[in-house]
Image (cartoon, rainbow, N blue to C red; front, side, top):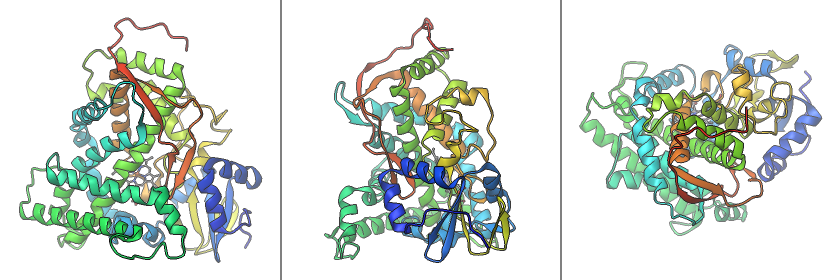
Length: 457
Ligand code: HEM
């Protein structure tokens, strides 16, 4: 059996290069080896695919290729042993069905106003002329929204504490100090509450305990009229008709809140970066928004074609999640003329698919117009992955992105502080703006009643 070619360097070294310069590293590898590449992890071949026909197979061939939960073991510490990423097969399908409604249809429309209110609340705390970082500011908004949609908490001590613990736990592994300590000989050992690793374990334990208490209390006061994800899970039965245990309910809540905070905030921080780096894009967006009048409803905002194209282009050029979650070859299968044997791991390379010249001419240029001129298939444009593990929050994420961007752009005047390009930083799963997108607010903004003359067509 001949595997696709790929770099011969050890995986740990490749990972280090990816951390330092994710896009540069992948561009070089793709140029040399093409759109199907093997990287060995010990004796296991990991095959990265960025060809739409190969991606289609990964997403649709469910007989020979599966989305095994065991492949996501590294996320179990943060996401719980029974989180959605750890599940597969029928149980995975069943739990996805339970989680989906909270993030779809009429349910999300009801959150429109709240998302805009929270955006104004957080943004109005910025001091005029004083630089702030867009990433943590937006995380504050998206975490609040996530906690409301998933847990149905809106205010109070519990709401604040859940937010504090969530952001501490998610931030901890990304901090430069934590990364440095992890490289030390005993850095990964837990020496108690005051050691870096011990403190991280303590925060995680506190978060899990608090969420468990929330599940217990909500079960005692189950209310069928509530529409948050937690209330629905408590009333749901598993595939055998039994109630879902409190521990499993807790684990199922974690990934959606984490993704709602991190993935959405990262996509928004990159969007703000591009919009403020390219004045013509900002102007065209503002004209589209201003034309909606003073109090547009969320449906009209979400339907705006140029705003939608800007969000798509932001998710194309620097996808928040560079790769799909891994899939496993269960029985021999041919992918792009390579015969792959059972045990081979397949990963969709979202970044490299979005960088294909044949699909996206001048791929390094931020050009929202490409999404107005052409429709891309789900195997060509895949910021939310696809198939068995396609993002359950995709519709909600786009809805939220558009409302937050529309609120910020139409109410506030912002600019980037740093004129140098923002570098990407690959942090385990997501690709963040390395310096957090430093911005400054220099004024409030009124809607322009006369559409301004645009220099763009
Ligand atoms: C712009 C924001 C977001 C991006 C770019 C994004 C991207 C992704 C991607 C690429 C995947 C992997 C799909 C695959 O392996 O094929 C995924 C899975 C997932 N996403 Fe998102 N996501 C975003 C927001 C959200 C939100 C708001 C939620 C909240 C519900 C969410 C929840 C999840 C979950 C639970 C999974 C795992 C699904 C499973 O294992 O079955 N994501 N997302």
